[in-house]
Amino acid sequence: MKFGQNIIWLDCVDNYTHSETWLQLTVPDVEEATEYLRLSGVETCDEIEELPEGMHWITDPAGTVFNLQQG
Image (cartoon, rainbow, N blue to C red):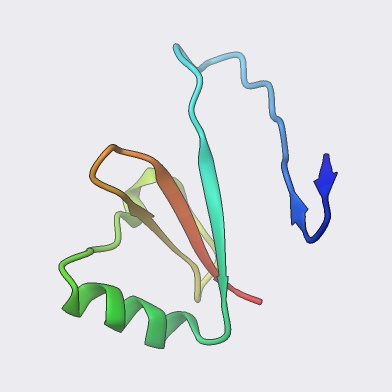
């Protein structure tokens, strides 16, 4: 679904026990953004799922998953 400049992808995955919301953060420079987040106490959690090089997973305190990628 497209809402202006925002796109929402709805995926049905049979092997998940509950629903999850994963959000995508598009930044001009992934490594710069990752370093900024690290200095602010936000670590990547790339073990969630394999990603192409230059992308990272992060989570907020409530457990919402964000995909950090260059755009």
